[in-house]
Length: 139
Image (cartoon, helix red, strand yellow):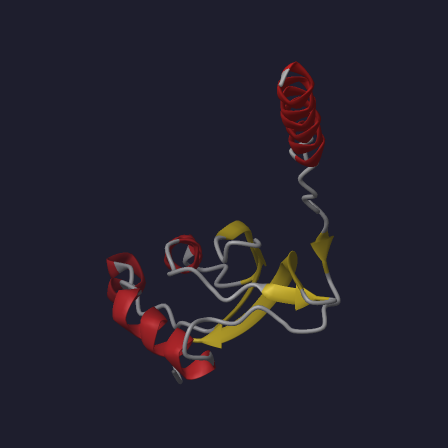
């Protein structure tokens, strides 16, 4: 009987040691690289037409630009879409020099956009650069 109890205790102890080994601390791999080239680009939910609808609905034309009859024009924006679809590091590459308020509003609207579908590279979501060119006059 003692031998049986010893064997049962020994097996339980050995099993618990194996369980501890299998629960060894895992290293979480997180790639912080921002990719220029990816397999699948980040997209706004619903695609480009939904992005234009979102901008039209949320962009507030600066009153000074209206009062001074400053025309809108092309805006070229660059930003990062992270692995969770959040927008970061918005930069205006080209905008309206005559009315900086246009530029600030464009950056605000893009920064506040809903989460995007992140880019994918080799089957994993990755941080990626994205550029968009917008002409609010024709959208």
